[in-house]
Image (cartoon, rainbow, N blue to C red):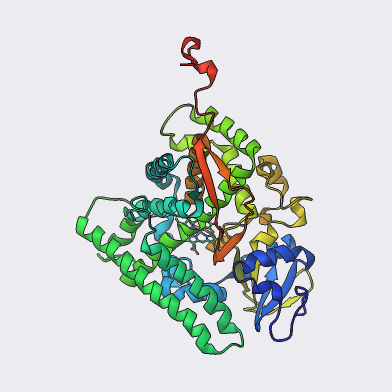
Length: 469
Ligand code: MNH
């Protein structure tokens, strides 16, 4: 299959654009519009076929012709995440069993149970920021705290203590070690560089993965000791099945827990951070959001589940953030059998593709200014008028994100809490840049919170005699 490729290709080295080590996917998103809906790229001999055009992505998403593929990057994670849901092969019996077992943990009813946990974590964040008013906060670090606490407490009743002390829990460091190691290994393994270099990446994944296993084993032990009457994801996995033993074996339970603790926070924290960056640049968006939050939440200090789901504008802010910054930058698809793409390209069974989501999210169908942050792109009428395969931050088909509703509820709740309470000021001259460790997160984003000038009750609600006390 001959395909276009990025400009200035060099012999042996390949396409210089991909040598942006900090954010290779973002670099590809930036050049994609000039190359085409389907293109190839090589770096030191490692080749990817990349899809960004709406039509070709719609074809790749067709579950009858294509299916999820792990691709080199997710294969690189296997030593740490095993056959957990994210990295299991499509045919894996453990995938079937775990998917069936865990889907109820993401039902509407289950979301209602997580809601109080999310409120509690939101309060810990505002307590922290209230103590630091007027000083800059490290946004990605604090969003990581929020998201890690939320998934730890919701899925396993476990607190990582992220808001105690100042450091990050070692789990975060080991997770970053695994993600970065897998990225390096995935690329080097397929390059012409000596194999020992790829082996160093693989070693890093195993070393940090082993540390994560120790941490989750401790979490499981604690649960077994406490024998609490809890009803969460971990409880579902440990509950005996018909034959008296848990449906998933011990090794698989460990992999699922690692998977959920990573997939359940790393992507949400990046998305929250990108959203706060845009809010700090757009007072008009903040005003519109505050108007909605005031209207729906009134002066309650603990909004109900429904009061969160009714925040349609804040939800659009989050949707638009994931359009511009899909924190899982891509997913892989492989052909189930020989087929031909509508572009005329022949495809053989098992040929695979990378859907570069940031590229798809800037397809010309999004209009003339795809780089512009505009939440109103997600007004219901505009969504209905667009093809369904144009927006894919949570992947596609059977293997799409199981935690989507969880992430959305958490993100809307946290964003609304912060928008309502704080004005966020960016450092002068800050320019957004993305950092990638498989997932995307803003680099060095610091914002200064001050109490929002509009947190006083609206004057109409206040007795005029008491208005200016
Ligand atoms: Mn999540 C799969 C994106 C939040 C748990 N997630 C995926 C995929 C994408 C994705 C894309 C599909 C990858 C692929 O096709 O190879 N996930 C996100 C984003 C957010 C997110 C952008 C937040 C924003 N994910 C969450 C949360 C959880 C979670 C929160 C858990 C609570 N995700 C998963 C799991 C899978 C997954 C588990 C694997 C599902 C499967 O294959 O069965």
